[in-house]
Length: 410
Image (cartoon, rainbow, N blue to C red; front, side, top):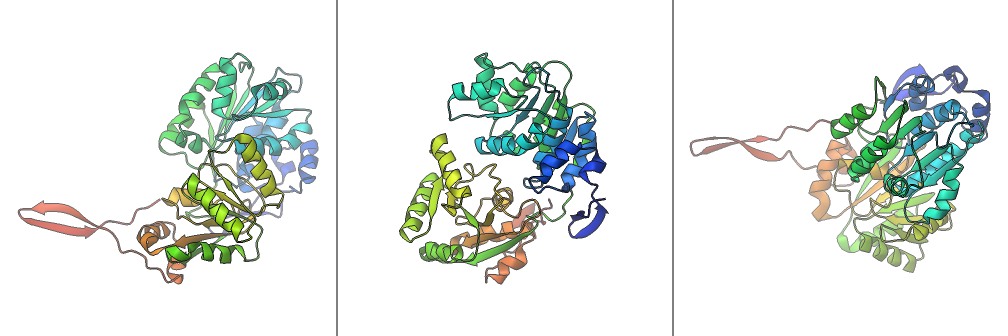
């Protein structure tokens, strides 16, 4: 047995099996060891045996839980290098995630004589097509893949393994029509693995439509926040917000990801920080893909240690060295908070999430903090948790009764 153990809300559970005990081949184990990956994370252990057996899989697990290897290892183990290409297709919602998944898959694939390529929008189709022709495993965003298929530059009828990664994000971003079209192009029997932060609602219906007799696995966490993160709220005047941000950035840290709500706000804040000697860059949807890639390279190398981003621009960012996520503009809701702060404290590491709160933002942010079970951290900053909202519930003659809105559950 591995010495690594799984935990759910701080409760120790059964020790996680080793990769060898899960049925992973020695060549893949050796490739993982070269990357200092010596024991499975919980989602990998839960999924591995069903995935290796070729079963369809539904997996509920948050970003940063180690899910990429949960599907990359079984794909590498099950594909035949002599089979027609591509044999496996991994759909992801963003360009950045496509690159990261391809990079993380490449080592285990190479151990089995397999090639990996990523295709996504914003760069030359011709250059991607050359790499795609050699790829056993294709990692793609739905829009670019549909474009390639419509141009008849790519056939998908030989795909035998389909993975939908961060499926909930793909639906949020409006990709379901493209995903439906791509799935319709697949022929013959296939294994489908579906990874998502939620399997409820539309995501669950989509999962059931795409899979058959699927094994369902879930990494359970009753605490609806980011495990391993130190959550801090700071009360600040609107006129002093940049000064307070600079103070936080002066702390001992690695890379810092700062969230703002608008593209213009990202550019403006990056300009002000650079004027104060902070090595900062803005990243948002108006940048070309080449500019986004350059910004990420400078950020991951540490040349720039502060990245100012909008929510859309930061989707799929999975970088080991992000120690601080700072909400310069508080997120709009709980889901956005989890997505943002989930960029740190990933895969067993620790990190810090900081939210700057001005007086006019205190009420809405307090409700979000309460739903995240972060009320104590919110009040430690001298901020006040809002009382339950009052709503009209009934009318009798000219009299109306009021009651507190019940606490919402996750």
